[in-house]
Length: 166
Image: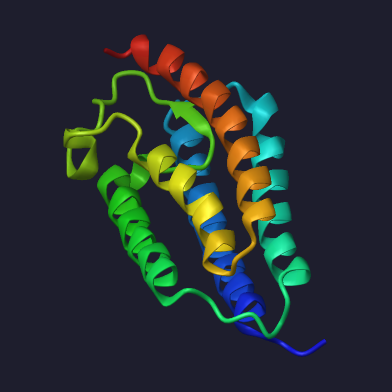
């Protein structure tokens, strides 16, 4: 298999996600050690499956010769900068799971000053955007919809947990 733009992009995104998971796992352990409690863990494997399948679909199903739309790829790159801003804003509280630490203040800096769930908004855009950058409308619709279904559950679950601390 010859490697094209989609394959190299999928590898880059996979490496970024792996780095995020390592960072999230460390924060998760620290929060639990500090008395935090993980809530609603049952849905988490579905997010891992969705994101893994999204990256794999981009790698295996997009033709190697397909050139990306440079504007959409640039927007995806800007979203990754937004992701770093979100992670930095949450600091030690950023994880990929729902963990609450009783008595900890809610984060109200960075994008959290204006938006309650900026990461979920970002992911809702990036999941369909990347396949669209390669002309893969079917993958954009499939993974975009599946992600929205999972996010609807996740946001409700997280809001329930955060309501206890508001």
